[in-house]
Length: 204
Image (cartoon, rainbow, N blue to C red; front, top):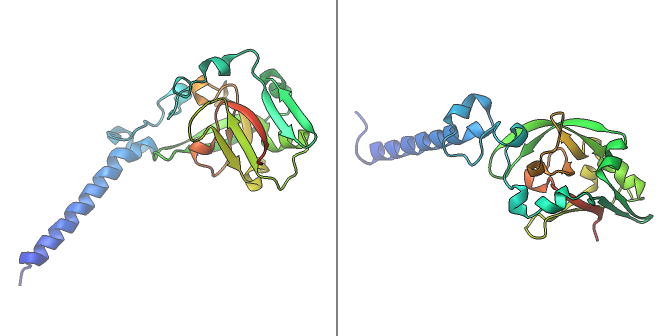
C-alpha cells in the first residue's frame, strides 16, 4: 500500500525542513570554508575579505579608538605586584618575538586562520611579577562596549601560544585588526581576543 494522508504529509514536512537547513548551511558556511565561498549569500562576513584578508566584525571607527590607537603616546600598561610598567610599541618589537598559527572563530559563525607574531603574554606577566595562577584582566582602548574589558584564566594566559600580537601574516596589524597590539590565544572566541590593548593586569 502506498503511503498517503497524514503520514505522507509528515514525511513531506520533515523533508522540507531538512532541505531548508541544508540550504541555510550552504549559503552561510562560505564564511569559514573556501570551497563553499561562492555560495556565501547571506553570511555576515566573507572569508578572505577585509583588511589583510581577514574579516572584521567591529572596526576601529565603530569602537571609537582611531585617534587613541594611532597616538604616538600609546603604551601598553602592565600591572603587577612588582609595580606598573608602560611599554611602547617599539619596545614591544624589541622584545623576544614568537609566532603562532591560530584561528579567529567569531560568534557570528565565521572562522579564519592566520599567522600571528608578537610577544608571549606570559613573558609580559612575568616582567611585572604576576603569579602564574592568577586570572588576567585585559582592557581595550574602547571607552564603551560589552567586550571593552575581558578576563583570561591562567591556563590561557600562560599558554606559550597566547600572544600580544603586533603583526599578522607578516605585516603590522591593520588598525581594524587591533593595532597597535591585540591578544590572540588558542581556543578563545573572537570577541575575547581583545583588540586595541591598553592595559593588562591581574583580575581584581
